[in-house]
Amino acid sequence: MASTQCLVVLFLITFTSTAFSRSILETSPKSHHSFTFNPISIRRKIPNDCDNWYCDSWRLSVETDNARSWTQIPARCLDFVEEYATCHHYSSDLEVVAKNALEFAKEVNVSIHGKDAWVFDIDETLLSNVGYFQLNGFGHVDVAALFSEWVDLAVDPALSASLVLYKELQKMGFKLILLTGRNESLRNATKKNLFEAGYSNWERLIMRRPPDMNKTVTEFKSEKRRELIYHGFTLHGNCGDQWSDLRGFAVATRSFKLPNPMYYIPL
Ligand SMILES: [Mg+2]
Image 1: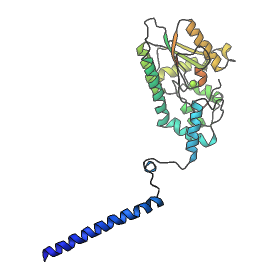
Image 2: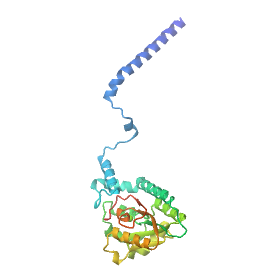
Image 3: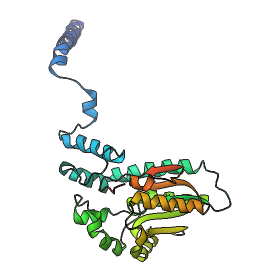
Image 4: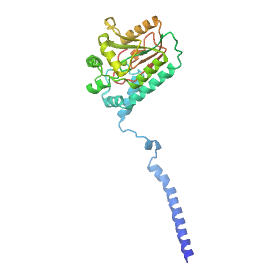
């Protein structure tokens, strides 16, 4: 009797299991059509807000200089730029640029003559003015208006990836040239800020003097690089957040563009 009950139970289990499997097999095609299974959509959040895609594309156009001469961050991208500059994305991009620069620097045979040089811009290259934009708003791209007052405060922190690169290049024997569009009148504040941010022992700090005031950034920086070459320096690398830091004549062997979607300085 007991064995008969067992056979019945076994039959029921086998039947229901088979029937259930069949029902799955039969209904799967219908489910496939009624529910689009997209494994990517499960793993990755696709933002409903198209602004994120647009602003990411806009930022790419800025960094590649396709957007040249832009004067305003698009209104729909203000939050995007603020988030970019104040979250990990910006520092991550900077780290990649610094890594690329260091890889190239390691290929250079630095001589004992002390003339192998590397050029750095200052704002958004060695020092970060993100604090200025947090106070004044990220749409406030007219950096000239209140910028001198801000620089005079000498409170900018270092961009940490640049500080690491700076120190590594020094250890390797490069002479570090700081070439900035800041006015000569800001020399003391600039030196104070650089020291406090961790930078020291640069070879030269070149700033704009009165004869340079009517020159474009590209003209001014190109002329200063040419003078350096005239004085025997070999310019192996040049780091800057603006294309005007990197273009023109007497350019370095390699130029490294740091990201900056906050403002644009004309060529
Ligand atoms: Mg700069």
